[in-house]
Length: 140
Image (tube, rainbow, N blue to C red; front, side, top):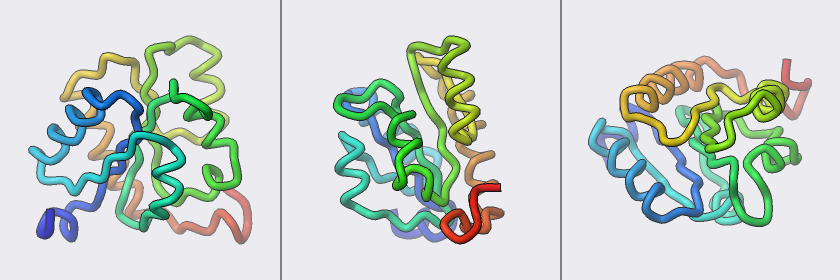
């Protein structure tokens, strides 16, 4: 993880399903990306990750707080990284809420590797372009 972290950035994975989380982490690692995986939004919040040069893959259906609820909270609104939201419930309502929350990409489960990696690659490019001024002057 040392060389890839500095060159390719870090992808944070938040999913309560250990098999999904481990599978995503293995795939991302195989592509040379730094990966930090969390089993809950609370664990992700506690870690207070550095957000520059990073993106977040977030499961929508999480216990306690959903992915979209987190993104609507003050912590979620102040994230300075693109968010890829994954969901098994990819209906019009979820898409509208994801768009309103500023989600970078919404992917339907099960996500194939090529689709996920295309979204992650684009998100990492966007991350490098973000100014991270959300707290000071709003999101737009």
